[in-house]
Length: 374
Image (cartoon, rainbow, N blue to C red; front, side, top):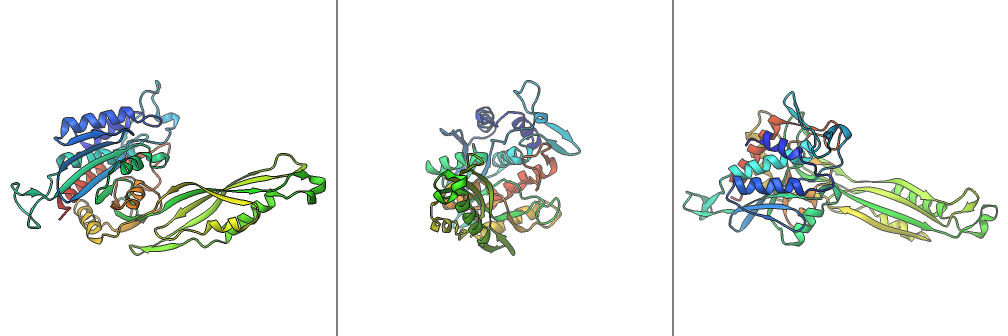
């Protein structure tokens, strides 16, 4: 089975609200096509392992998707629409990221586990140099549910290639290697006051006024930045929602604002400063961690594999979006992000991916897997 065929099969299976069916297909495919040890954990993650050794390299993806557009669902709603046009596959999940999951599965099937003796690659009679893992998680689109569950259950590879999009960053069509990405922290600032009649506002305490004081603090913050791979990865913090008040003639006793913060490896914006205001509380609702690869040898090995499979010259780059690489990195795994999706494709009504780039990624993953550990 080719990477395009497996992608089509996976994409056609709905996995917005329930990933069970597509997980079943992945599990069955791995059991049929490989001799690996395949498991399915309580969350629904599909994990396959082969080889053994001191270090583990994981090829990581996720098989859940965001809600499809009406045009991406077949009439009976039991199947997603998958179409091929001009060398691309169109459909929900083609880019984000069942295409890369298929490429990783093909690479896992076709990879020969490196064998070593005294630190040097030798014949097949030598001991395996390390373990190769395929992992496709559930719940990435809703906060990394599957990755967090796997980590809690002991999933701890030393290295991981996460197949989220990295194509088209340094130049159109080039599959690059992302060595860092931003995280996302979402939080709520709640201001409380005292209700009063608007004609006697001095008798109360206006919660909206307290909230606007908090907004000014957010606006004046200088989010941190970090230099990675010759790029400046900059954080941000922006107020995105505000809700307060009950009637035109009532001084409000409560007002909420939400803040979207894009984080970078290292320091965070000092949003806790709003709690110095009277009657103001700050609560973190979601915190998707950023990622930075600190193992230059690993990053260069993946970059060399990327360079070998395409005529253009790829680069080490940074990525603006949070991925499951953040959870893995926070748990101690050295990660890079490398995949077929291009900027602007994920979550769109006409989501698509290049078949040629999927094939490229499958070969890229295979080459990297056979050269690491080393």
